[in-house]
Amino acid sequence: MAGLDELFERNRAWAAATIEEDPHFFTVLAERQTPEYLWIGCSDSRVPANQIVGLLPGDVFVHRNVANVVVHTDLNCLSVVQFAVDVLKVKHIIICGHYGCGGINAVVHRREMGLIDNWLRHVEDVYLRYRDVLEAIPDMTARVDRLCEYNVLEQVENLCRTTVIQTAWKNGQPLTVHGWVYRVDDGILRDLDICINAIDEIPKLRDTARYLAKGP
Ligand code: CO
Image (cartoon, rainbow, N blue to C red; front, top):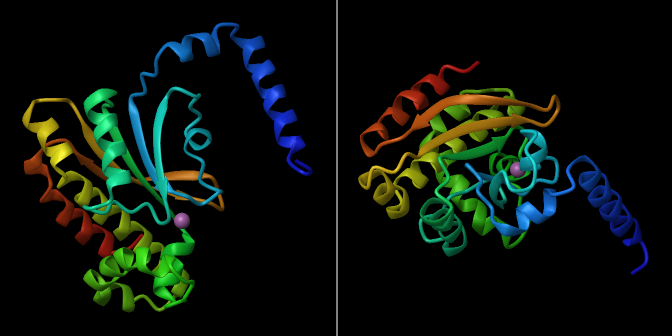
């Protein structure tokens, strides 16, 4: 396959370098995975979960889709969450958005891109919920970035309302849901101070929404 040979070469070099550093790395990983984290992030090529937080294969279970959305009826996302929580027993779930997200940008600028517009209607729901605050921000880049933050907040809430998460909490399983935003232009993660580990903590997200409305 012309053009892709380089990828296989890079793979062999990476596997060799990894084994040189730890001869048992792959054989240990092949036995089982025990990640402590589930990462739900955007599909954007500039936001690779493992690299951003410096974690190795085996350390983080990952689900990515356009604009890091948790939809109540998305069997794909729900299955990832259920497997991560019930089988892998992850302790932390991180929903990580990123500033300048193309999906969020398309919603703010009403850009039409085809089928994906239907997926992004979920982000538009978030836009409409915070429309007053968002439309009071004159700078469009800042408006997009604020929606990136609100979107993380709303997806955290969606996740916390799933039966999977609520059942885990009811059973006393230690599990915390976090909301972060990554900045593509400096490589730095920002913690939105969202830290939900029980059903009765969910209303705290409204405090975060009020805090976000004040801006940076
Ligand atoms: Co994105």
